[in-house]
Amino acid sequence: MKHISVEAFKEIVDVEKSNDTVDFINVCTPEEYAAEHIEGVRSVPLDEIAQHAQEFAGKKTIFVHCRSGRRGEIAIKTLEDLGVTAELVNVEGGLLAWNDAGFATHNH
View 1 (tube, one colour):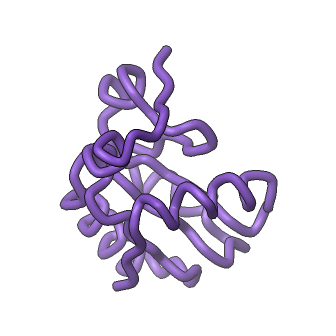
View 2: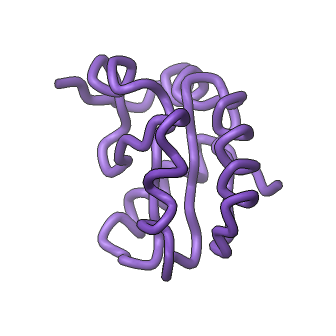
């Protein structure tokens, strides 16, 4: 499983957010996502990930994050089990590390 730092993730989101072959997903609950999320990252809750599997067809890379990193790793394993062929990358430390680095988040 590939991991990247929040610093590297921030640069990639900024550069690749309009790239159709790259996906950025937050696997927190919808309530957690509404309370705080990273701009350019969409909500795909961990417990609903199987229903979204077809959305990942044609993607080259999928970056996954959660609040701390643990659910991101579970999500990547689940995506692998579902047969997703994209490169799957976990953002180390998730939102907690993102906030510790001083990066901005959004809420609804």
